[in-house]
Length: 128
Image (cartoon, rainbow, N blue to C red; front, top):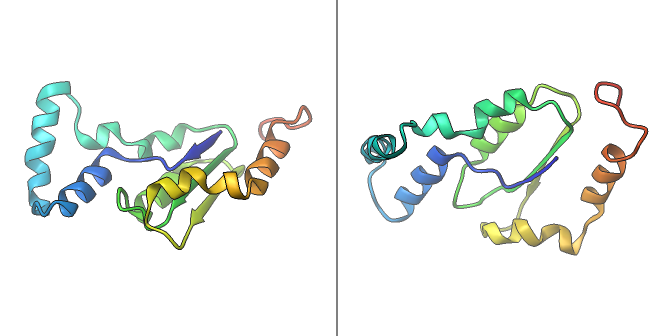
């Protein structure tokens, strides 16, 4: 699996509130309104905990200074993936999220190496 720039709802909403000048303590009000609409708390919709169930080779990549998230959130997702066949690549030198989506168009070598390693017929889960 290649997971480009995954987002947690809480981190994204907290970052969004900060960008428009709404105090951080208002996240609880927003969370309650969302919960009333869909019955889920923000953390219930987070890929951070779900990452603990990932059992396939996973390559995450993320713009390190993306204004829509925090590096600690992405790192937590990566750390929760319980297998050895994983990789996290930080795209640095920009804060523009879109640069993450176009990064491998300029230099696809890492992604091609990943696919070559884990999409070949000789690879089996748990054997490397």
